[in-house]
Length: 296
Image 1 (tube, rainbow, N blue to C red):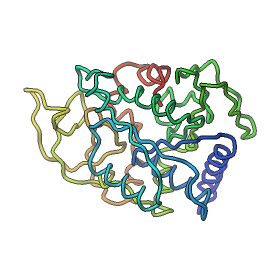
Image 2 (tube, one colour; image 1 turned 90 degrees about the horizontal axis):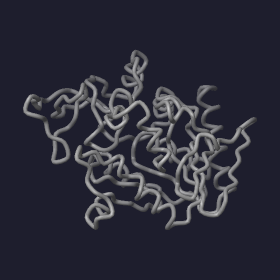
Image 3 (cartoon, rainbow, N blue to C red; image 1 turned 180 degrees about the horizontal axis):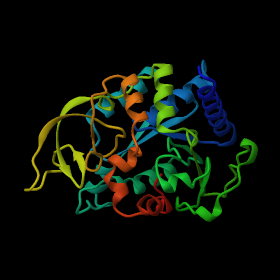
Image 4 (cartoon, helix red, strand yellow; image 1 turned 30 degrees about the vertical axis):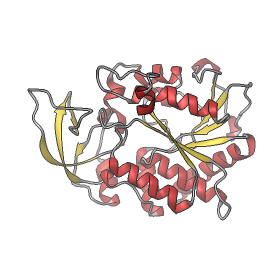
């Protein structure tokens, strides 16, 4: 293990163990995407050979990539973990949420997420967010206090000197924790290579039918159809990030191995979310606005 990756791993393992020691009902958000896969790998490693002392939660938009869901379930079964799925579709079916006119479901994840946290009385919630992903996430501390409504207030951030983390919270509040805060996308991929971590196949180049909208290559389906001026075509693509299919774009790529992905990233000049997430492009402060409402 390179010394730099060893330091990142040690920091993340320390954070995860702090959560286990400081909170009564901790929870890991797990989507099957590369960051949550790496975070789960670190968590399993942090407590091995003992079982993982966390429950998993996936907020399923109903528009997830099948390859990611298959990988998610395979990983949960492999480690014998407990996972709860909070389905956005159930909230739409019973009227608690309304389908958006633009078809995007990522913004609809907030209510099921907050309900699951409240119902499980979870006081510490781990997520795979990284500071290099997006401007609002760059503002957030490793331990991020959320109020009784799940909202984030940047003015209530706490200092984190000498890797000392403050998890104190009032009844009804909880703390979001980001063990991968100081990792970059390239760090994540280099760690995946080093640890031989299994990922969903769509992170690697494959042929897929896509169409272009607002400069992004989207997969057609009931959730997202090409307009009259657009035409679906088959291209060799891969995904840098995986989320709701209605807003997650692919990039043209020939990278079919982890080593090739790492080489490709070395030449990239765009962030993964900036290049492939339409929901983050709705406004300059789209992510921060959603985080203030309780989004991760």
